[in-house]
Image (cartoon, rainbow, N blue to C red):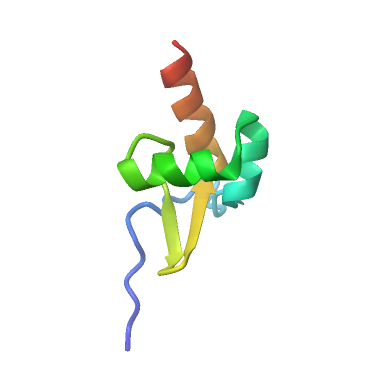
Length: 73
C-alpha cells in the first residue's frame, strides 16, 4: 500500500522536513495551557495542525510563528 503524503507536510526551501512541535511545546511557546491549544484545534482557531497519525497532532514551528504574527497584528 502506498501512503499519500498530506499536503500540510510542506518541505522547507532547503529540502529539509519542518520542525514539528507537540501540543505541550506549542502551549509552552505561547504561554497557555495545553487544553487551550486543544480547544483551538477543535474549533479551528489555532495554528494549523499536521496529523502525523489519527491520534498524533503536530505543529510546524514556522506555521505556529506565522499564526502568532497574524493574530498579534
